[in-house]
Image 1 (cartoon, rainbow, N blue to C red):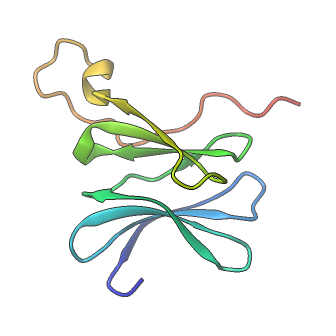
Image 2: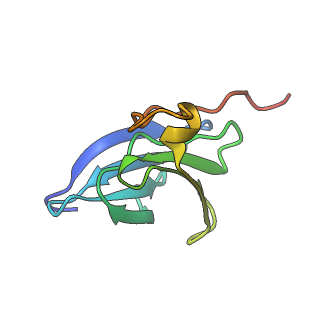
Length: 114
């Protein structure tokens, strides 16, 4: 989109799609899915920047850090509008700390079976 800055570009495990974290001129973040025909589909938009998405090993879900909201978002790549959020991420990594830093980098722990 005009005026948008790409913050991260991550290839899907099968290499046929890309997840893009971008920020517009107003500072709103977005996660956009780009298919092999270069068709773009927005999966999520929200205030503030988003971190680099991480694909699940099976390529069905994206884990996206959202520091502004202190959340991790789990976005379904094939189901528009489907998401789950985990809140208070910073304090979950540093219980009891005052003003803990947000862990911006994310990744899945395990590879796909088989």
